[in-house]
Image (cartoon, rainbow, N blue to C red; front, side):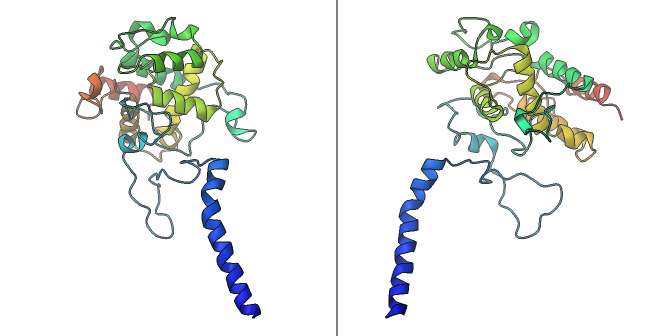
Length: 262
């Protein structure tokens, strides 16, 4: 009799776990990154069974809650390295919320190179030329909440904004990841801060440590910024939503060698 009672209790417990499981997940939230939904290529084979092939960023981006229907995917909408922290923040004393450290000169020069391919003379106030309805104010005078309101109010047009031409899914992902408040102004400093994370996700630290070849780092940057060319001289997103490279590959390569000699 005790054996039958124990078996019945075990079965009821199992059924309760099945029915209550979704409620627990819904209450606590489910993070695609924290639950290892995104697979990233490791620098060395990992023990155990081989991981599943990484889904293409364009395919995964549509699953993100901040991706609008018909929005331009890729271009940083999905992190190339979900485990990367934002650059130049103290990692030992609070991670993303630690004081921002001074970026080395090489990063400023790299950002200048990216901006030359993306923003033109407008720089931090650049708005994608294909946007028929421009923001009501200069981007640097807008808050994150105001930019989001402009995006939501003008569907069906490009919304790349700022010196680094953040598309909506990328901007919202970075803002969420870094804990930027909606009331924060889209200042040059904030734009640089967000771009720092994209550079780190592209493999900046691994490249400096000689763990990533220069050509791979350049390719990763081109996967984020459509104005940068791949080895063929074309944009990684050539012809997609009007994208094309605005620098030659020879110029890109020579500038990268100047910024990061050796």
